[in-house]
Amino acid sequence: MRAIFEPFCTVLEAHTAKAAVELCAAAPPDLIIADLTLPYQNGEFLLANLRAGSRDMQLTPLILLTPHDDARPDHALAADDYLSRPFNARELLSRGHMQLQLGKRRRDLEARFEERTAELQALMDESPMGIIRIAPTGELTYANSEWWVQLGS
Image (cartoon, rainbow, N blue to C red):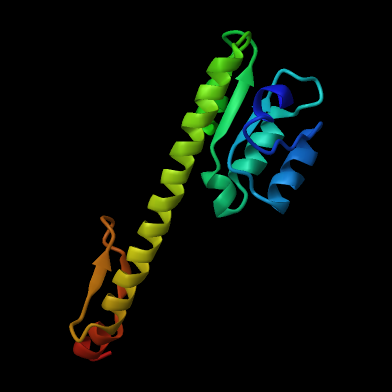
């Protein structure tokens, strides 16, 4: 793995799932490639902790390397891509490059979404008109202060 990627980027390796999670938590990488066939990898632990981590970790592209035709549905859903063994180095490189580009775009879109959400929240909170949001169940999920003033509460 190191020989495939080292000419193009910095490669960090972990030999256990726990070490991988700790390494990623310390400095979220741009791409994670996890080999689930190795005996010291606990795939369930790795996937659960990577996807339940910080927002950066949730947005980090994840490629899973799996035994031949053994991409289980839970792994496929947790990963952004998976590659069955045996694979060719060029295919892994091209998928890694594609996931890096998609990851950059995803982070940009998420940042823009959060910015627009904050702007909209500020507009609703400071609006001179009463604004409410009601869930389909009929539960009141948001009401700005002006709504309560107009309601007389």
